[in-house]
Length: 526
Image 1: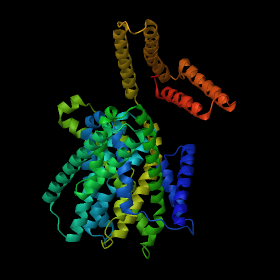
Image 2 (image 1 turned 30 degrees about the vertical axis):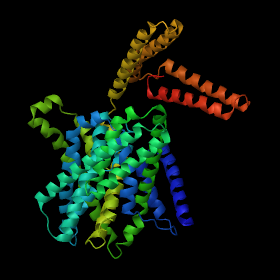
Image 3 (image 1 turned 90 degrees about the horizontal axis):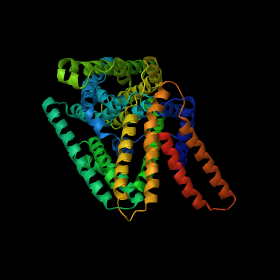
Image 4 (image 1 turned 45 degrees about the vertical axis):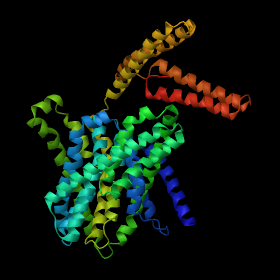
């Protein structure tokens, strides 16, 4: 027991240290976590840590997928559904077939069905790695939407393909029509169950007026969706994704300000800790992977792993460009509705294919009697390491070289929405001003406040244009920041002089924190 606690505390220390190092050297943290786990695994005398597949699928995967779906824009997801499905289903099946044939050719002892199992395992890019890397690099919002949407759905298609490959290996028979029908049933069943679980979660949260309890219900929702789907033998991943999208769409109606202010940092912390743990655990699996291959030529295995990793990368590139341009060439309506995207943006999507913990957990979860299991685990590890390190580290340079920049579509939408909201409030204020029970002084003071907000929102357009031309932030924004800084110092001084107690200080500090957060997010909205 003490050893397990020591290992857990050691993992937390490693997560904190590697996260600080990643920020200092400006490297996406999943890459550094995996490399850090590799280095730690090579230290002699340390206890071995085995990544249990059940732990990943039942404990880690649901809470990692759910917040990604919860905070996904349904409008953007639906608008990009065609490219998302082409990647999440079409590319997954294409990768499964190509990598399967290549692995069967390279490793003579690897049966074809086992090789296809390897292809299915390494076919889905990792949701965590894609989000963690692209969101920090300033790429257009549509690229992020497509990559996140792909990573939400592709695990389901990959795991279903893996299921049929393993079944074919065990039974020695495979029926394509039966596989296609089963895939449809598993997918539709997962979506239906996810909608049901999401609806139940929303109904429960509607009559709960207690933020901690609401957060607990939100935390239990992905587990209920995934475990229920697994019991019904439908897609657990699609059930979690669907439940997350549904709850996310309804959350503004069921959560008040107190709940939202607590829920967002809660999910952020949960996701970050789980991400750090699983990526470090990936690196820690190397000794066990090598132990299972005693007597094999490491040089030959590494060469085969490099070729398979290269194939995984190249297959994505080969698929993405035709899948992007061919439908537009064949359909004038599609071309008119959604014109040809720039080749630079398409290149970023083609190069962003990092693999992660789902692939390794799927490999470790293969039956122990399955022929070629040890080779599959080793090659999966090679693909994860190669895609994370090679693609992850080169992606920032590729984005810079191609001069791909983030667009300001979200910022413009936000500014317009804030303007509409403030104008609606002003209209309502004018209606209330006609009532005799409302003092004119109060109406005038509130009217002046809303007029200031509207004026500031309009000035933000000028600030955006100046920033695009290389100018720094507006003087008004800098004045706000300095004023908040002085307020903090004054409140801290009163606490230190024992004029106010810590509880009063924290309440005022909370308001100042919210004001500072709004200042960093954009136009001030009180």
